Length: 171
Image 1 (spheres, rainbow, N blue to C red):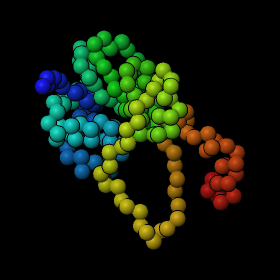
Image 2: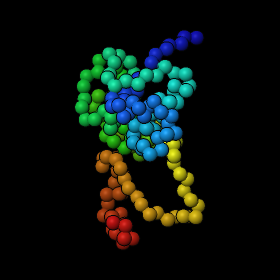
Image 3: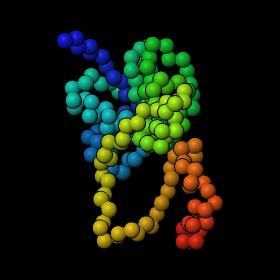
Image 4: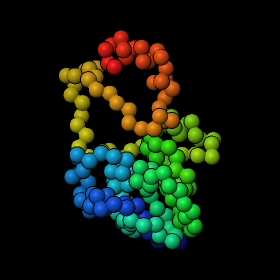
């Protein structure tokens, strides 16, 4: 059996992100972003499973780096011997990434045959999620879409949808 050991790097370029990774992720309840479920929880779960993981604020010369699209920003650069895995969530593809991960099955289907092929992985369960109260039944009080417009299903841009929401006084 051949076992190859390597370190997986997790990109956390700011003090705020680094401090988050130094905490137990059950303390993240008030902090929700692409970073917490994609980078933070993946880091903790791989570390707990015995993988060699390291938090970085600068890209190394070579290796495998996992980063979320929001933390990477809009810059692109040549990465040489570095493999960048981008957790894009509902954001756009990052031009420097070699692999993109999405939690959105529609995004996966839409881009399956494109140059921007994404791999589908569901989110980790987020800490602090409160189960829906059964007494609420079908009641919806708030709805929001936070993501890139390019990832929004076309049905939600249609006049029929907007008119339906308006008729329910939800606009």
